[in-house]
Structure formats: structure tokens, C-alpha cells
Image 1 (cartoon, rainbow, N blue to C red):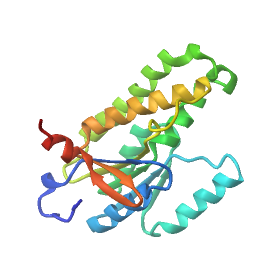
Image 2: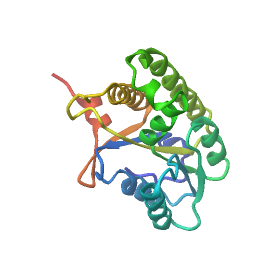
Image 3: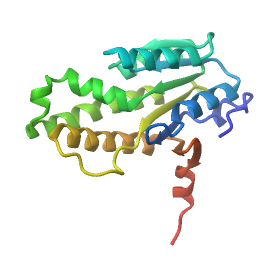
Image 4: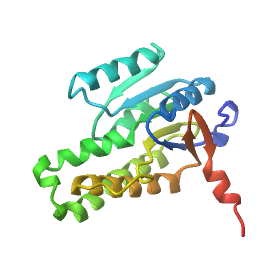
Length: 206
């Protein structure tokens, strides 16, 4: 992806989605795209320091980012965070939808409630409403602003054995589909390499 045409704001992609498995290079690729754009960057971090391991992970990610990047920590309210980030930067990285959805689901009830199969309908609808609000926020950005969204592809493995895992997998799959449909470019990350699957999809014929 190239975002170097700074003279034509309308040529800049408004929404870019990066998805892949764990340790596939999603965050590194997102940060490289933002750096190569040569534009100002803000970072929306959705992770919360809930335990020592997560605190270490957050610290490692923070130390790897340039000091001049703006960082906004927001575990739940993505549309609000986007407006705040876009006010101070031209390229915004949202990392990541996977963690955001986990935060959002657990904000809806305790773990025992979420383990029951009776929660699916309300959580499908509620999560997608949050994503629709984010997409609406993207559509309202000034020309020349770009949001790079990082998410995981969790649907390639076995069906989870517990209810919460199945709900999480299914809701994230729908969230990813909703964002991918609106994105200018969608990259599937494999071993640090990004394949532009949206472009392949648009050119595919029988």
C-alpha cells in the first residue's frame, strides 16, 4: 500500500483493514504503513492492563512506537476515540478490534452470564451497532484522513467448546465482515506479509 500522494487528499484510502492470526505481523505492518505515509499519526490502544502479562505486552508495544505519535487509550468507545485521534493526526491506527470486542462483551455482563447460550442475539446486535457508529465516524472524517484497523481472524480453527468462545468467534466474524465491506483495502497478514485480498476479490471472475 502507498499513502505517499500527499498532494491529492482524495486519493488517500479512508479505511484500511489488516487481519490475520496471532503473531502474523499485523501491528508491525500497520505501523509501517503509517510511518511510510509521512503524515502525522495517532494510535488508539484498546488493551487494558488487567494482569502482569498484559502490562508487559502494553509496555513493549508502547516502547516500539515513535515518541511523537499521539496515543489514545480507549477500551470501549471507538467512535469517540476516532474523533479525538483524527483531530490531532492524519493517520489513525486502531489496534485492535479483537481486544475491543472482548472488552465490550465483558462490559455487558459477568463471565457466568456470558457463558450462557442465551446472550447471542443481543450481543450480535449491540456489537454491530458500535461498529456502525465507528464506520459512520469514518465517513465524516475530513478528506486525507486514514484509519488503519487491526483485527484477528479467529474463524479458521476448530469450533470453540464453550458458549462464550462460540459467541465471541461469531460476533468477531460479523464485525470483521462489516469493516471489510467498508474498507478501501483489506490485507490478510501471513508470516509478516500482507496480501491485498480486497483487490483480489474485486478482480475475481469465473
